[in-house]
Image (cartoon, helix red, strand yellow):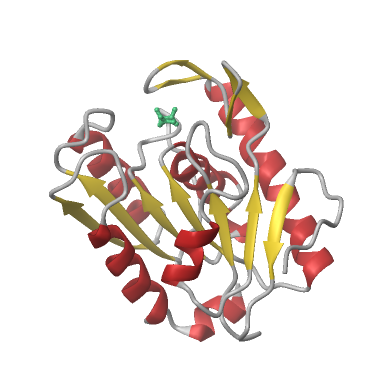
Length: 214
Ligand code: MLT
């Protein structure tokens, strides 16, 4: 079932079969929309509620979650503004659908806005799976991510995300207290079967106590 409650982002909501399964916030890549990651969400968390907003920024008609000046060069003021906007939407979604703090599952641009949201509004997310993520802000904000589980999945052949950039992101989230697992897969920028398997295992093993306390 897809609900269409009017909130500040165009979005799709799919209820979960298990009300105790931590909900997922699905964040698509450039050119995607609220439908893109529903299938992935169901594969990695079969019983979870899925909240999936559409990025509000258009680049040549393609939805994104924040402006960029060039590939891999971000408009950081916009990153901050949009991360706060997304955090507000998470609050609206939680109230509208009766959800605990969700775990972000972001791909590419969606992973980058998830990382920014974790750093700028840590209380809004219970954790994150960041697929092909990069450092969203050159100067990492001081954040308390104590105990938040984060899985970063990078590709060793990713032409868009230099490996040292993903390693810096892992280090900054770790420095902020997150429990970070960073895996580098033999993959490019695209999603692979290994991403699906690792994300599924990570979410299945996530302690419920962390989720409900968030
Ligand atoms: C970004 O702009 O967030 C990254 O370059 C990834 C992408 O969207 O292609």
